Length: 214
Image 1 (cartoon, rainbow, N blue to C red):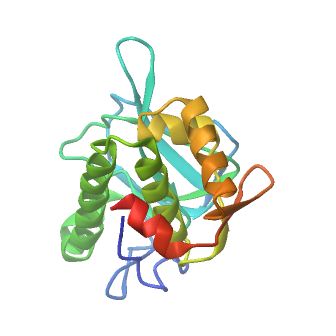
Image 2: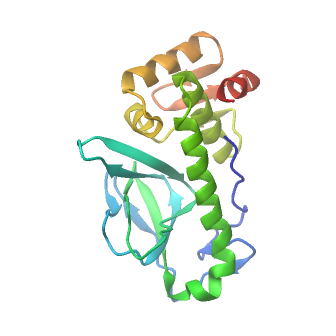
């Protein structure tokens, strides 16, 4: 799964948009710190803002009718979320761990629409890529694609931390936590990845992981 990164200056203060378009300071709010599990917005709430992750990570999810949770997206530092097709949030968003969020109110959206469009399109591409991952039959393919995506979104690092738990990963990939843990173990045993503690991952054989994800 390949997603083009945001421009390097995107996370600069004040809230900045691609192409060097800063958000109007009257609409950009100070960073708000959220503890793990804090709700940023809820399904059904009125949507009037965009959100940029300053640090930490966010999960976006929906509760299914049978009580199960389906995570539709993770957002990492520097990324923007909260795009909606209408004036209502259709998912929940909450902090995974200690997370800083900067809010941009959309009163200025008309003036910034040309700068916001690339971000909205990027969110759409990620959603489409996620659907392709869920359509793969093999659990190993889903986990491989997920690890490559996390590495690329954090700067194509060989070693990186996963801010989310194995349960989060399972709910994102449509797998059980036991399956996710088993795939991680098999990838480690085959020397494709190395695990460092609960969250640290090091990719030892990039091409093998890419081959598995295709």
